[in-house]
Length: 263
Image (cartoon, rainbow, N blue to C red; front, side):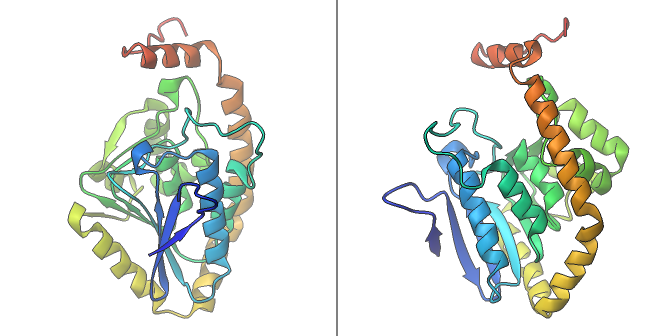
């Protein structure tokens, strides 16, 4: 396994492993449930760009190290003030929607926030039987991100997308499959056998055909995704620090359910 993004003793936030023409990228902050801090956002963006430009790799699989897939954005670690991000969330999002090759997710455990909305940016999603996903935005007094207001409706149909984004409820693997968020549910211990197996079917095809077909699928959607992400970002920032968001944060700190009856 090749470790990436380790500079001067910094933690290795992602790792990559190549199996022939298939690359497996692992989120590698298991102690933080693979939550994205600014350095990991940049590391993932770098990995996507490097893999996009590597003609030896035809298919990319993304999974999580340890028991979680990703707990989303790490609110406890917003990065150091004096070191601006190289890519930031917008740059990582752009790397996802411009990624020219088949992109598969192997959801091995909990996925929250971006760990859930990322499903809309992938081509195929495989999910372990015991894994669960959640978009907690409304429960935090916030709103959706990563163009999920567009991708989820396209994937699931409007009513399932409405439920997922408005309710903040947990979704088990079978619900995710029924909603169309997930291509296949796999026994936990077989996830990293089955996903590469499917990836190898794709990798047996010519790279030019894979890239051309994916571009034809993505081209009509890309501008709408960019626009949705920008609009969501403005809306999200307008709600951060608002009364409902502050109540959600206080409730979390006090280990109680938030009271939104007056909001």
